[in-house]
Length: 255
Image (cartoon, rainbow, N blue to C red):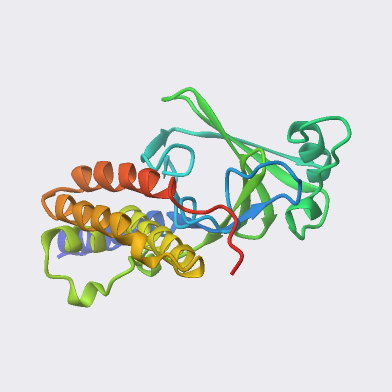
């Protein structure tokens, strides 16, 4: 009898331990793209969908993210964290200003923060890289992206990362795989938003008839996507097409 009692106790504690570890997994998503108000030629547009919906996923021992590369998923193992206070305005001015006459601050990007803020350096020994985040507020972080753009990360539940289509109506294998993977869901949403930003630009310029080439490329992409039978195939095809399609998206939108 005692043997069964100890066995049940062990199983219960193991289950509790599993739940505790699972609770330590946190997920953030790129929810906003800030751009500076400088006069330089932009490489990124405000809330640029090529960066929106990218994922930063952290647990006790590893980090997975597609933020620091061209949508490829990188894994950081046995990471080490350093955290210290900085003045964010000084950082921007020293590291991102294009010349001595340019003054950059958080206000240049329309970012509201209270100084000083925490800089968080994450060293990944397995890939010998350091990723840096800036703590905007609790569960919200900033990442310097390009010389004129900053990404904002917000905490999100995995099940709330959704593609552009209804997963309830998903019938194709490719669609089901996308629905099961938040990285693919984010990529799908990015492609959707880029495509419709381009379409909106053609409509604004009264040249929708010329949109046919873009539309045909989109159909061809979907045809190739639907031939995929695994997540890696989808990530490769969707990542490549996201970059290709983004090249046709206007960076300045007057509408």
